Amino acid sequence: MRASLKGKHVSGGERIITEEAIPEALCELLKRPREHDFLKLTLERIGEVEVLEYSLAVSSFEFASVEEARKFALEKLVEIGVPESTVRRGIQLLSEGPNPRGGNTRGAVLMDIETGERLEPDPERGVRTVRVDWRDRFKVMEHLRRQGFTERTLDALAIATKNVYCGVVAELCWSDDPDYITGYVASSKYGYVRITPLKEEGDPFGGRIYFIRREGVGDLIRCLEGKPLLIDCLPP
Ligand code: WAQ
Ligand code: MG
Ligand code: MG
Image (cartoon, rainbow, N blue to C red; front, side, top):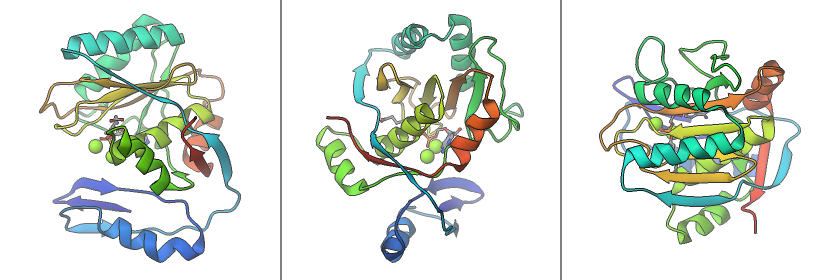
Protein backbone atom coordinates (compact mmCIF):
# COMPACT_ATOMS: atom_id res chain seq x y z
CA MET A 1 0.00 0.00 0.00
CA ARG A 2 1.12 3.53 -0.63
CA ALA A 3 -0.76 6.71 0.00
CA SER A 4 -0.10 10.34 -0.78
CA LEU A 5 -1.51 13.76 -0.12
CA LYS A 6 -1.08 16.58 -2.68
CA GLY A 7 1.54 14.49 -4.49
CA LYS A 8 3.58 13.85 -1.33
CA HIS A 9 4.06 10.33 0.05
CA VAL A 10 2.42 10.04 3.48
CA SER A 11 2.20 6.33 4.23
CA GLY A 12 3.24 2.96 2.89
CA GLY A 13 3.33 -0.64 3.99
CA GLU A 14 3.92 -4.14 2.81
CA ARG A 15 2.71 -7.50 4.16
CA ILE A 16 3.70 -11.08 3.33
CA ILE A 17 0.67 -13.15 4.33
CA THR A 18 -1.36 -16.23 3.48
CA GLU A 19 -4.39 -15.93 1.22
CA GLU A 20 -6.87 -16.23 4.11
CA ALA A 21 -5.32 -13.21 5.83
CA ILE A 22 -5.79 -10.85 2.84
CA PRO A 23 -9.09 -9.14 3.87
CA GLU A 24 -7.83 -8.35 7.36
CA ALA A 25 -4.50 -7.02 6.07
CA LEU A 26 -6.25 -4.83 3.48
CA CYS A 27 -8.46 -3.30 6.16
CA GLU A 28 -5.50 -2.62 8.42
CA LEU A 29 -3.47 -1.00 5.61
CA LEU A 30 -6.45 1.10 4.43
CA LYS A 31 -6.71 2.63 7.91
CA ARG A 32 -3.04 3.52 8.19
CA PRO A 33 -2.77 6.95 6.51
CA ARG A 34 -4.35 9.63 8.68
CA GLU A 35 -5.17 11.80 5.68
CA HIS A 36 -4.71 11.09 1.97
CA ASP A 37 -6.16 11.91 -1.43
CA PHE A 38 -4.58 8.94 -3.21
CA LEU A 39 -4.08 5.36 -2.08
CA LYS A 40 -2.90 2.40 -4.11
CA LEU A 41 -3.03 -1.26 -3.10
CA THR A 42 -1.14 -3.92 -5.00
CA LEU A 43 -1.55 -7.67 -4.44
CA GLU A 44 1.00 -10.11 -5.73
CA ARG A 45 1.18 -13.89 -5.44
CA ILE A 46 4.66 -14.98 -4.37
CA GLY A 47 6.17 -18.46 -4.38
CA GLU A 48 8.89 -19.68 -2.06
CA VAL A 49 9.39 -17.61 1.08
CA GLU A 50 12.52 -17.97 3.15
CA VAL A 51 12.04 -17.83 6.92
CA LEU A 52 14.76 -16.31 9.07
CA GLU A 53 14.66 -17.32 12.72
CA TYR A 54 15.88 -14.08 14.32
CA SER A 55 15.98 -10.40 13.48
CA LEU A 56 18.97 -8.29 14.46
CA ALA A 57 19.14 -7.51 18.18
CA VAL A 58 18.00 -4.03 19.23
CA SER A 59 19.92 -1.61 21.43
CA SER A 60 19.45 2.14 22.06
CA PHE A 61 21.75 5.08 22.81
CA GLU A 62 20.89 8.69 23.56
CA PHE A 63 23.10 11.73 23.30
CA ALA A 64 22.89 15.37 24.29
CA SER A 65 23.52 16.67 20.74
CA VAL A 66 23.39 15.69 17.08
CA GLU A 67 27.14 16.18 16.91
CA GLU A 68 27.79 13.59 19.64
CA ALA A 69 25.24 11.17 18.21
CA ARG A 70 26.77 11.35 14.73
CA LYS A 71 30.24 10.90 16.22
CA PHE A 72 29.02 7.71 17.93
CA ALA A 73 27.47 6.48 14.65
CA LEU A 74 30.74 7.20 12.87
CA GLU A 75 32.77 5.29 15.46
CA LYS A 76 30.42 2.29 15.25
CA LEU A 77 30.67 2.21 11.44
CA VAL A 78 34.46 2.44 11.60
CA GLU A 79 34.53 -0.46 14.11
CA ILE A 80 32.40 -2.47 11.67
CA GLY A 81 35.04 -1.87 9.01
CA VAL A 82 33.84 1.11 6.98
CA PRO A 83 36.70 3.55 6.33
CA GLU A 84 36.20 6.90 8.05
CA SER A 85 36.25 8.84 4.76
CA THR A 86 33.40 6.68 3.41
CA VAL A 87 31.37 7.15 6.60
CA ARG A 88 31.81 10.93 6.39
CA ARG A 89 30.59 10.87 2.80
CA GLY A 90 27.50 8.92 3.89
CA ILE A 91 26.70 11.31 6.75
CA GLN A 92 27.16 14.27 4.39
CA LEU A 93 24.76 12.75 1.82
CA LEU A 94 22.02 12.09 4.37
CA SER A 95 22.33 15.55 5.87
CA GLU A 96 21.89 17.18 2.42
CA GLY A 97 19.34 14.72 1.03
CA PRO A 98 20.73 11.98 -1.25
CA ASN A 99 18.89 12.96 -4.45
CA PRO A 100 21.40 14.39 -6.98
CA ARG A 101 18.61 16.76 -8.12
CA GLY A 102 18.07 17.91 -4.55
CA GLY A 103 16.00 16.51 -1.69
CA ASN A 104 15.38 12.93 -0.65
CA THR A 105 14.98 9.65 -2.53
CA ARG A 106 12.44 6.83 -2.21
CA GLY A 107 15.18 4.22 -1.94
CA ALA A 108 18.61 3.74 -0.42
CA VAL A 109 22.07 4.78 -1.56
CA LEU A 110 24.43 1.87 -2.27
CA MET A 111 27.87 3.07 -1.26
CA ASP A 112 31.09 1.28 -2.16
CA ILE A 113 32.87 0.76 1.17
CA GLU A 114 36.31 1.19 -0.32
CA THR A 115 35.84 4.29 -2.49
CA GLY A 116 32.64 5.95 -1.25
CA GLU A 117 31.27 5.79 -4.81
CA ARG A 118 27.53 5.47 -5.34
CA LEU A 119 26.59 2.22 -7.06
CA GLU A 120 22.79 2.36 -7.33
CA PRO A 121 21.60 2.18 -10.97
CA ASP A 122 19.31 5.21 -10.55
CA PRO A 123 20.53 7.63 -7.86
CA GLU A 124 17.34 9.72 -8.10
CA ARG A 125 15.34 6.68 -6.98
CA GLY A 126 17.78 4.57 -4.97
CA VAL A 127 17.30 0.87 -4.23
CA ARG A 128 14.28 -0.31 -2.20
CA THR A 129 14.31 -3.12 0.32
CA VAL A 130 10.96 -4.85 -0.18
CA ARG A 131 9.31 -8.27 0.24
CA VAL A 132 10.17 -8.51 3.91
CA ASP A 133 7.78 -8.95 6.82
CA TRP A 134 7.37 -10.53 10.26
CA ARG A 135 5.75 -13.94 10.54
CA ASP A 136 3.66 -12.56 13.41
CA ARG A 137 3.79 -8.75 13.32
CA PHE A 138 1.42 -8.44 16.26
CA LYS A 139 3.54 -10.58 18.57
CA VAL A 140 6.78 -8.80 17.75
CA MET A 141 5.07 -5.39 18.03
CA GLU A 142 3.94 -6.28 21.55
CA HIS A 143 7.53 -7.08 22.56
CA LEU A 144 8.79 -3.83 21.07
CA ARG A 145 5.95 -1.80 22.57
CA ARG A 146 6.87 -3.04 26.03
CA GLN A 147 10.34 -1.58 25.46
CA GLY A 148 8.75 1.74 24.48
CA PHE A 149 9.22 1.42 20.71
CA THR A 150 6.68 2.00 17.92
CA GLU A 151 5.78 0.50 14.57
CA ARG A 152 8.53 2.61 13.04
CA THR A 153 11.10 0.41 14.81
CA LEU A 154 9.19 -2.73 13.76
CA ASP A 155 9.37 -1.78 10.07
CA ALA A 156 12.91 -0.39 10.12
CA LEU A 157 14.17 -3.48 11.99
CA ALA A 158 12.67 -5.75 9.31
CA ILE A 159 14.33 -3.73 6.55
CA ALA A 160 17.70 -3.64 8.35
CA THR A 161 17.55 -7.39 9.04
CA LYS A 162 16.85 -8.17 5.39
CA ASN A 163 19.67 -5.85 4.30
CA VAL A 164 22.22 -7.71 6.43
CA TYR A 165 20.78 -11.04 5.25
CA CYS A 166 21.29 -9.94 1.60
CA GLY A 167 24.92 -8.94 2.24
CA VAL A 168 24.89 -5.26 3.18
CA VAL A 169 27.94 -4.76 5.44
CA ALA A 170 26.48 -1.83 7.37
CA GLU A 171 23.56 0.56 7.13
CA LEU A 172 23.18 4.14 8.32
CA CYS A 173 19.63 5.52 8.46
CA TRP A 174 17.70 8.47 9.68
CA SER A 175 14.22 9.47 8.64
CA ASP A 176 13.37 12.23 6.20
CA ASP A 177 10.38 13.07 8.43
CA PRO A 178 11.12 16.47 10.06
CA ASP A 179 9.81 15.36 13.46
CA TYR A 180 11.58 11.97 13.76
CA ILE A 181 15.15 12.30 14.96
CA THR A 182 16.07 8.75 16.02
CA GLY A 183 18.07 6.81 13.45
CA TYR A 184 20.24 3.72 13.53
CA VAL A 185 23.37 1.89 12.47
CA ALA A 186 22.79 -1.76 11.55
CA SER A 187 25.27 -4.58 10.96
CA SER A 188 25.68 -8.28 11.69
CA LYS A 189 28.39 -7.33 14.20
CA TYR A 190 26.38 -5.00 16.49
CA GLY A 191 22.80 -5.59 15.39
CA TYR A 192 20.30 -2.74 15.18
CA VAL A 193 21.73 0.18 17.14
CA ARG A 194 19.20 3.00 17.63
CA ILE A 195 20.77 6.43 18.01
CA THR A 196 19.11 9.69 19.16
CA PRO A 197 19.30 12.44 17.89
CA LEU A 198 20.85 11.85 14.47
CA LYS A 199 19.35 15.12 13.22
CA GLU A 200 17.78 18.31 14.54
CA GLU A 201 14.04 18.61 15.05
CA GLY A 202 12.50 20.14 11.89
CA ASP A 203 15.25 18.98 9.52
CA PRO A 204 13.51 17.61 6.35
CA PHE A 205 16.45 15.51 5.08
CA GLY A 206 17.23 11.85 5.63
CA GLY A 207 17.64 8.51 3.94
CA ARG A 208 19.50 5.25 4.03
CA ILE A 209 23.09 4.44 3.11
CA TYR A 210 23.91 0.78 2.50
CA PHE A 211 27.68 0.32 2.76
CA ILE A 212 28.54 -2.56 0.43
CA ARG A 213 31.34 -4.33 -1.39
CA ARG A 214 31.14 -3.59 -5.09
CA GLU A 215 31.59 -7.23 -6.16
CA GLY A 216 28.19 -8.85 -6.44
CA VAL A 217 26.18 -5.63 -6.47
CA GLY A 218 23.78 -7.17 -9.03
CA ASP A 219 23.00 -10.15 -6.76
CA LEU A 220 22.60 -7.80 -3.82
CA ILE A 221 19.99 -5.67 -5.63
CA ARG A 222 18.11 -8.80 -6.75
CA CYS A 223 18.01 -9.99 -3.14
CA LEU A 224 16.89 -6.61 -1.71
CA GLU A 225 14.17 -6.07 -4.31
CA GLY A 226 13.16 -9.59 -5.15
CA LYS A 227 13.73 -12.22 -2.46
CA PRO A 228 10.71 -12.83 -0.20
CA LEU A 229 11.79 -13.05 3.44
CA LEU A 230 9.81 -13.61 6.63
CA ILE A 231 11.39 -12.97 10.01
CA ASP A 232 10.22 -15.16 12.85
CA CYS A 233 11.03 -13.19 16.01
CA LEU A 234 13.40 -11.01 18.00
CA PRO A 235 16.52 -12.80 19.27
CA PRO A 236 16.26 -14.14 22.87
N1 WAQ B 1 14.17 0.55 1.16
C1 WAQ B 1 15.20 1.40 0.99
N2 WAQ B 1 15.18 2.68 1.40
C2 WAQ B 1 14.06 3.12 1.99
C3 WAQ B 1 12.93 2.29 2.19
C4 WAQ B 1 13.02 0.94 1.74
N3 WAQ B 1 12.01 0.09 1.87
N4 WAQ B 1 11.97 3.01 2.84
C5 WAQ B 1 12.49 4.24 3.01
N5 WAQ B 1 13.74 4.32 2.50
C6 WAQ B 1 14.65 5.46 2.53
C7 WAQ B 1 14.12 6.68 1.82
O1 WAQ B 1 15.20 7.39 1.26
C8 WAQ B 1 13.51 7.48 2.94
O2 WAQ B 1 13.56 8.87 2.67
C9 WAQ B 1 14.45 7.16 4.09
O3 WAQ B 1 14.86 5.82 3.87
C10 WAQ B 1 13.82 7.28 5.45
O4 WAQ B 1 12.60 6.53 5.48
O5 WAQ B 1 13.10 4.33 16.29
O6 WAQ B 1 11.16 6.15 9.51
O7 WAQ B 1 10.50 5.69 6.45
O8 WAQ B 1 13.97 2.38 15.80
O9 WAQ B 1 11.29 8.10 6.92
C11 WAQ B 1 14.28 4.70 11.99
C12 WAQ B 1 13.69 4.04 13.19
C13 WAQ B 1 13.13 5.28 11.24
C14 WAQ B 1 14.53 4.24 14.40
C15 WAQ B 1 13.47 5.46 9.84
O10 WAQ B 1 12.59 6.12 7.81
C16 WAQ B 1 13.82 3.60 15.59
C17 WAQ B 1 12.27 5.93 9.06
P1 WAQ B 1 11.63 6.64 6.67
MG1 MG C 1 8.60 5.04 5.90
MG1 MG D 1 9.80 9.14 5.64
